[in-house]
Length: 316
Ligand SMILES: *[C@@H]1O[C@H](CO)[C@@H](O)[C@H](O)[C@H]1NC(C)=O
Image 1 (tube, rainbow, N blue to C red):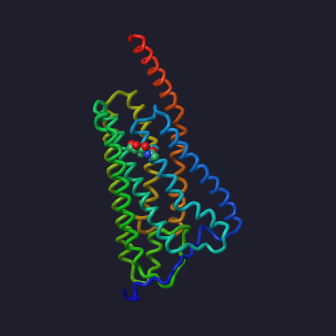
Image 2 (cartoon, rainbow, N blue to C red):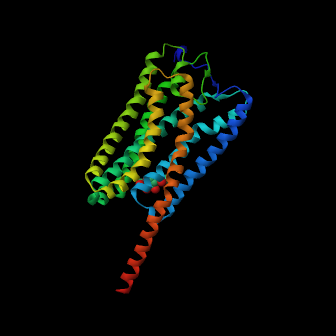
Image 3 (cartoon, rainbow, N blue to C red):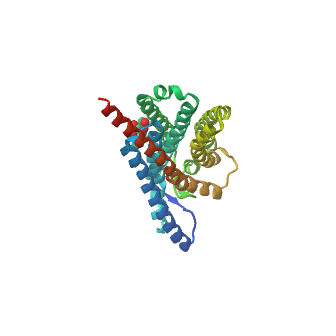
């Protein structure tokens, strides 16, 4: 152990979103409300899907996973941001900072892989409908979900392991409302420019790989839909629009923050808020709005299966 690697900084200072006390009070109320909606909405979706046996299909299981993890994505940064609005000194401990980096990368990478899996699920359902139940068996679904946890974990670990070892010796100000990896790396007492590029590149590789896989899936879906009848096409498309909306709004900010070289602090902050508050709000809103249609479909499915049970009982 040489002294050079010793960190002397035990906490960082978050500069937050803005300096005006009144605006912060307003933001406090707004984000409190949004956060309550995020948590209750996403928990509602998870409970609805897990308890309603008519929703026990891979598509809804993945949706439940997405909602579950969206809630945590928001919880990594939002509660801290909300309480910080009311505090003069917005400090965060070194450990807290590292866990924010770890969990935000863990969950974001997990969510990206999950979105790819959901696209693959739609691809199988639309392009290979006859083989759907064999391809998307329960074991396969669980294996896919576990794979995305592992990818998320490995990605987050590889970021945090590097950042934890950086020498932090003086500067402590982070111009954001949470510990964002690039901003923390900038504080290290060393020439961190190359490292920053390397770490951003790693995030970029994960995001862009997922994005390309998503593009391929949705292109296949569009081509298949295009070739088939018009009614079937619009039906299949409406299932996918929700997915595509989530994908665009999730990857847009992310690719902008980590891959776009010329982004400004102001823009980064705005996108970070977008990322941790608006994206987790999307699932509840998009899928609750669409839920009426789904519910009707499942009500008729329910009726049909009752009729089927009665018929088979009658024939016994
Ligand atoms: C996540 O997906 C798996 C596999 O489809 C499923 O068994 C599990 O119940 C889901 N978890 C949640 C919290 O929805």
